[in-house]
Length: 122
Image (cartoon, rainbow, N blue to C red):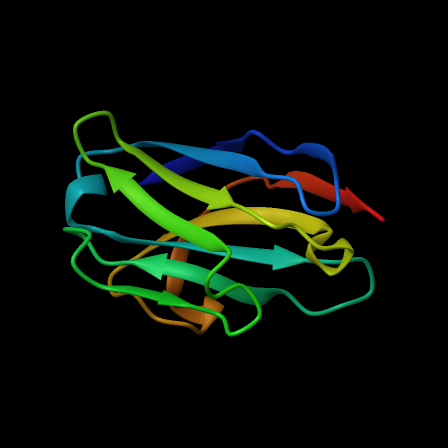
């Protein structure tokens, strides 16, 4: 079982940058795909980015391509989401999740963090 805890959320002005961290625990972290999802008030949870167990494969939502970067460090059991050129529409609670494969559908992830809020002001 993999347990994850997100951190790094906060408020930033449009055009700014913010980095999120997801600290994981559990023996299976190094063999688990990790994903970032986000949910704005009144909206469905949506895919943001995912990374394979060895970091060799990454996928991004079209809305964040070229602006966000997902990475992982299996030595310290942490996955990151580096967000640049932030837009007001990026405002949401961001969730880290662990799964067997780097899928885009949240239903295939079995361990979720508590979420960390990100607010981008115009």
